[in-house]
Length: 341
Ligand SMILES: *Cc1c(COP(=O)(O)O)cnc(C)c1O
Image (tube, rainbow, N blue to C red; front, side, top):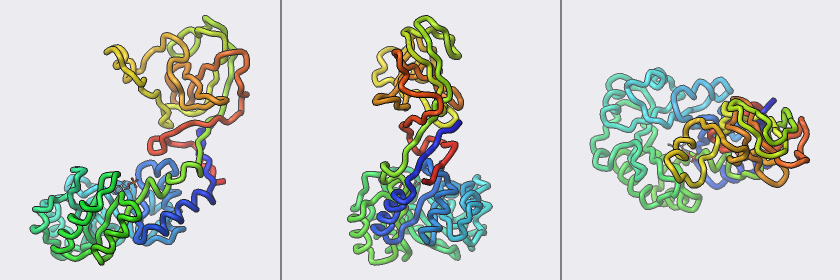
C-alpha cells in the first residue's frame, strides 16, 4: 500500500559523480526529508562518495546521519541561537561544526564554549542570516576552532557578491570560504580569485539534478464502477458522470495535496483553495496521478494515505494492483518505500 520512489541507482550515482567532479571541496547537503531520498540514504551515499564533511539543516538532524553511519564532520547550516538546546548540546562535539550568524552569538560561544568549531556566516542579498560587511571588523573568534566564512547565495548565483563577501571576510581572518548556489564556472572563478580553500554546499543539484533517474509511483488499491448520481467520499458528493472511482495510494501524509487553482476569481474560490473544501462536482481538480496519457482528476481532496480519483467513461484504463506515475515535489514528499533498483 505504498507511495514509492523508484531510483535507477546507477544513473542516479552517475549524476552525483559528475557534480562531485565539477565541484572540488563539495559538501553534500542532507537535510529535511533528504530531498525525498531520506536523510539516512543520503548520509550513506556521502560516505560512499568518500566526502570528509556533510551538511545538515538543523541540530536534530545530526543524530539521524550519525545513526545512518556517518562518522566524519557534520556542519549544521542553520545558525546557532542561545535558545536552541539541541544545537547547544553539540557545541562540545569535536565532529560538529556550528554556524554563527550574529556578533552576540559569537561572543557567547567565545565565553561559554571556547573549543567549539564554528563557521561565521555573512549576510548575502538573500537577507536571511549573517553578519553585515560592516560587522566583519568586530569578529573575534578567540580560541574557537575557526573553520571559515559561510556565504549562502540566492539560487540565481552571484559571483560578484560572493567575491566581495569572501574577500572581506578572508582579509579580516584567513579561513576557508563555504558557498552555495554558484555554477561550476563561477565557482572555479571564485577559487582562482581567492586562492585559498573553498567549500561548495550542494543538495538539489547533487541529489535531484537528473530527474530522469528517479520516479514516483502510487498503486491502484480499489476500483468502483459508478454512475451519475452515485454518492461517494467523505463529503458524500454525487458523481456527475458515469465512470470509475479509483483509490490510489498516496495522500496528505505523503505530501500529496490539492494544487491551488490557477486563477482564484472570487473570495469564495480563495477560501475554498486553502480550506478543506467540498467539491460540488466531480473532477474539478487535476491530481498528480497520471492514468493513461493524462493526469486524472481528484474525486475529492486526498485522504491521509490514499487519494480518490474519478475516471470518466466505460474503461478505467487501470486495474487494481497497477502502479501509476505520480508527479511529486521531492522536498515535500514522504515516500513509504525507496526502491534502489
Ligand atoms: C539548503 C542549503 C544549501 C543547499 O541548497 P540546495 O539548493 O539544495 O543545493 C546550501 N547552503 C545552505 C546554507 C542551505 O541552507
